[in-house]
Image (tube, rainbow, N blue to C red; front, side, top):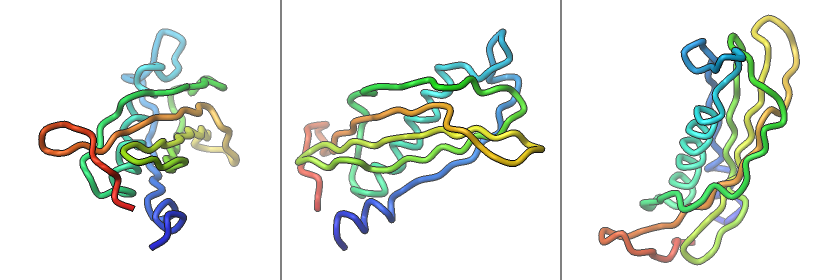
Length: 128
């Protein structure tokens, strides 16, 4: 399987509903909760790509473009964007859509870096 085929096969999509217990005093999704969900989908994409033990080493940049209100549906999409010797980068987008209306908008974009590790927690080569 080529790298591009592995990237396509490992793309990860998760849908969630934004409930009041995940919102702040403005009735929008907590930023920390969004980051948690993004790291999770990025981890799944990285692991599906490599089929190795992966750990997050950085969240390189997270841009909050639109608030995400309670009572909406979000889709998180994680996709491997770069592959190095022992690390890889995953871009994650969160799209928001109203439950009872058509359309969706990009709300948050972020980038996460993962490293493959062995049983001693030392970096190892990503098998390509």
